[in-house]
Length: 324
Ligand code: ES4
Ligand code: ZN
Image (cartoon, rainbow, N blue to C red; front, side, top):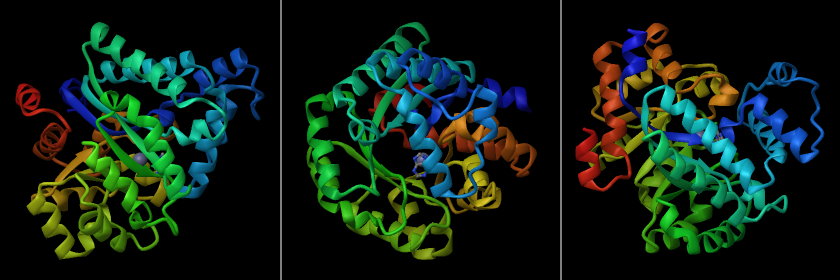
């Protein structure tokens, strides 16, 4: 069964490129760029990954990004993720990046996106893996900062398929960014937002995503199961939900396997994703395998989840048809 999962052609729709920064690459970049790390070895750094909720994870995640400084660093980050994805038979990926986490420390937007783009082009040519980029705004920064970031991104619009919203949800509802997302929509970009599991006012946030923002997908969105009306809207609109089981196990101590099964029963388009694989120590295959081995999901359920990713991917219909 695990070999079957490993060899299935898969898509990943919810992976933060900054969350693919492996401790070994952190150390290599720290040495190259003259950045001091708090730990002496990659193993010691890994041992300090003691997060148990979203804020404790995010503080470790943002601190680690200081080693990413030059275009080549963003190339290497993306290239190493895509090489790993290819090994796992991921044939298509939509990848988030957090430009404000870099521009706020003096790294130019152009530096970030050019490095990522070069790796995407090389991966298409050399690994046969097709990818698109989703720009995520940091919801704990201001709406003005998000709007400035969108404006910085517009000259590169042909390299970006959509926009998302991530980081700390507490006191940062979707409506805070209504204007930014309306502008992104007018520019022809797709829209998604994180509604992480069990966050403050999560049902209100999901409702705002559907009613105010008009999202094309929801990242996580597991709590929608608590409200039949939200489930109905998600099902009727055919919206994808990008669920991240092992991320959930770290952040809310729960793989959410029964919830994923329930979504499938209700005809909601749940997909499985890795979120921040270098931190949660699990890429896509490990997430799917955990759902089978520990969550009790059947082979048919796993196959449906994998298929759903291609169904809700932001692809032109002829490309989608070729995958399905
Ligand atoms: C994230 Cl797990 C999670 N939640 C919200 N924002 C994020 N950015 C990276 N990982
Ligand atoms: Zn995420």
